[in-house]
Length: 135
Image (cartoon, rainbow, N blue to C red; front, side, top):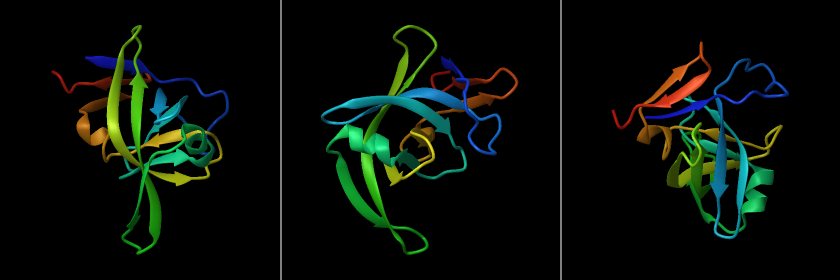
């Protein structure tokens, strides 16, 4: 079982309130960057802040039309979620993510390519995220 305590945010994320936030490492071809990962169970696709994308260098890129027929620039990113225990991590390859200028450098963790690979329990009382995929 993989588990991680939610990280405390020194600055609130506008009006979200208490949110499940974990440590992530975004891995590109030339570089990697550590940042906060906001678990967004209502989002189909992950979102990466534009400043974080610029630090990663070259990534696989493609465009896709959304339901509203707007084109979105999608990138495939390898994502590592770090756990509580030393060396404990879950790594996901080729996670599709939309690039957007966000109010802070974070990675919004969506369903496709990441949450759809897990059976996750969000414990708001204890501020913990537990992956029960192997149980």
